[in-house]
Amino acid sequence: MKCVWCQQPIQMNWTLSQLFGRRPLQVPQLCAACLRTFAPIDAATACPGCGRQASPKLCFDCQRWQQQGPLLHHQGVFAYNAAMKAFIQRYKGLGDWRLHRAFQAQLIPSKRGVFVPLTSEPKHFASRGFDPVLGLFAHLPLRLWLQKADTPTPQAKKDRTGRLATPQSFTVRAGVVFGQAKRVILVDDLYTTGRTFYHAAAALQAAGFQGEITSFSLIR
Amino acid sequence: MWYSGMQLLDSEVDFDTSVAQAVPGLAAGRCQRCGQKGLVELPSGDDYCPHCINLGRVSSQTTLYRFAAPPLPPVEQPLTWQGELTPAQARIAAELVAAVQTKTEHLLWAVTGAGKTEILFPAIASVLTAGGRVGVATPRLDVVRELAPRLQAAFAHTAMAVRYGGVSWPQTTVALTVMTTHQLLRYYQAFDLLVIDENDAFPFVHDPALWHAVSAASRGAKLWLSATPPKRLQQAAKHGKIGLSILPRRFHGQPLPVPQVQIRKGQLPHKIPSKWVKALQQIMTTRQCLLFVPDIAWLAPIVQQLKVAVTPAVSSVHAADPNRVEKVSAFRQGQLRLLVTTTILERGVTIPRCAVVVLGADSQRFDAAALIQMAGRAGRAADSPDDPVWFYARHDTLALHQAVHTIRQLNARKSQ
Image (cartoon, rainbow over all chains, first blue to last red; front, side, top):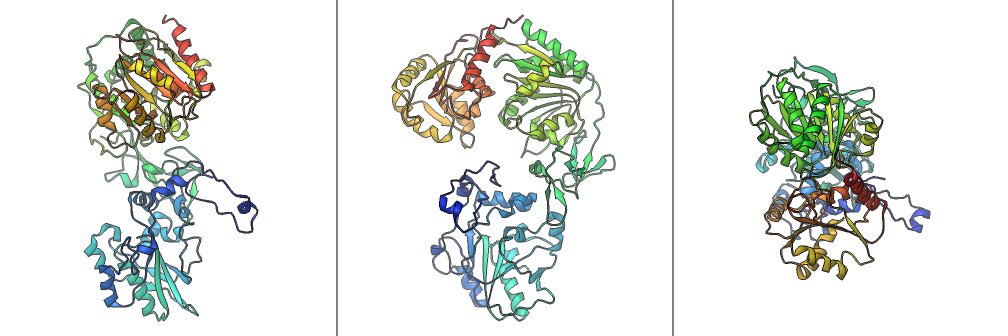
């Protein structure tokens, strides 16, 4: 077993109950030293609206989102620190698909519901050869309800105002049946301004989804 | 053209590629840039090469553009270096020139502090005179930074480029390129003389992609330089597959300091045995001292003890240290008397009148080559060739024996 990030062998000290228990063995993808370089967000002190770090009260951005409709009550797992930037650069920028399972042990949402990924644009899929979000959340049962049209500039290349002004590019795929679903959990790699998530939620509501919509991401 | 002899990806070229030979990035299950198997499949069904991905991804969709490297106009007297080689150095230099003329592969095994760089000058000059291209590659960035100004000074009128990850490339035609070994992956049949310095250093030895890069980037002579050549090259030389020159004496003609091994059970790094502290105090009265430790975690507790027991002019340095350059230069200038360091300073550092102490010399992280390199930091100056070298260990290891044995053997060899 090698750490997918530093390629050093991972030393595991299994306990007897882990080895002989009924649960499947959890094989770590990242070694302890690499995992320590990423900064997990403490959910107890995070903003209840967007999961922003160390903001126990509803933050200013969320107060603005609240005027437009119900909040997503977003949960982000890690802060966007230097190590995480390096990870995203390698995974999405260089296109190293081997990293897609790196955070599968950490990316477990606390709520139950239907997981709907915010898929990438067809253009990006063609150049990368994979969808980064589908890769990160490959361990969850995903429903491909949403699709994204090609946009001229990616979010990562815009400033804050530019991001917030982004027009809607999500639509619900043809033939999707919402069925008995009571809650949808939107999953994506990154929550920055929330623009993308709120567009996705609006697309679902426009297609007639009645239940609760919440969201979950690797990075806040 | 600056891209002569290079092989570049679609994403790296924004100019006319019609003169280039276009090859698919992957062929027959191998990456065409780094030559490695073990491709990874993408969900789209394409493959990509994970080995050399840091230089930009090569996938089934990628085209690799290979640019020819036409000969340059011949130059008269490219060497502007005024120094003189010792007779032993001159004899080896002549052997290297002969190897370059016959376009063969050659190993120069020269002890630490033998003046390897200067020995190279005639061979490099002979290629430049004929209008050839020369590449000098080394795995260590520190060594690139140290070599580049020395080469530029010796070949003052030659256009030279320095290439390593993260710097922008000079966009001019160059005859001489100094680079890290990873950059070799971007070259294809480019160099009439390729010199690989410190080829036994991490990450070169254990990376088959880099060995492949050396053969792909070269179209003439290959010169391997090392004080501690890897077994693979030693064997090849022994069987006559590649040429071999040995320089067992330093430029000042004195033997290498032989390490003294001390075995003592102690609680390193939290408590350095008092006997060793006394020995260190003794050394420090006349010399500076480099103290090597096997682990970054050892640095802080050891510095703390030495600050009280030996000298207040002590500091530590490691690879990720933000003040690394400043600390090393403070040590060079003598403001720091004692420097505690990890293996980053094992190569390419020359400090006159410097003793070497290796704590935890029995660590798995120190192989014989690393120990010889660390010992080689001592006795570099002509006025104190016998600086003490101490290996402090808790146990005996094979690497310790190999290191001491090799140094003794080289000392016993007559410099013919």
